Length: 231
Image (cartoon, rainbow, N blue to C red):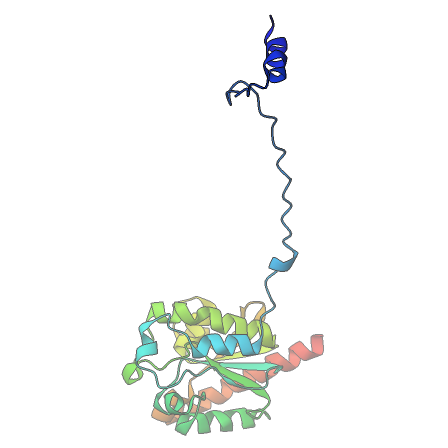
């Protein structure tokens, strides 16, 4: 008697039949195809509010433990000119603003000499927190802050960058060349022309160098004017 006929007899007699799990092959369960939709994973565009919040809460390096305020930058967010300095000093750390105090006053006069005001430009620094005792920023501190400066430049899209001082110039241009060799030339940072000038704090310590600073500013203005004429 074949197995199928035997099972029919047993069921007719009311006898329960228990089947081994291995005796009846299980039909494969179809696995639904999963289609991932990445349309909602597109990175959100950068914004001033997002970037400023990141800087204010930054803890990427030890400077966050000694600062009073981060110094994000100030000025015209659609400026043709971006002014980049080294980093905050004591007054900047206290007020949360770039280039205040005596150096800030001199920068205001330097800008006025080429018919600009602080409201015409955007002023930022390579690093956003004051190093203790106004020491030079360390390489790793600059590296941690470099993304912030890059994003500021990308948001502003300036036509000209004026780098003030050795550290700002060397950072933007990724070079170890001394300031004297970087002055009087047009460099680039992210496809934006860069002109290097003396830092106002340096000029306050070495007053005779102000004449060289005027040469730097005149060269920057000439470069910008020529650029505007070529557009």
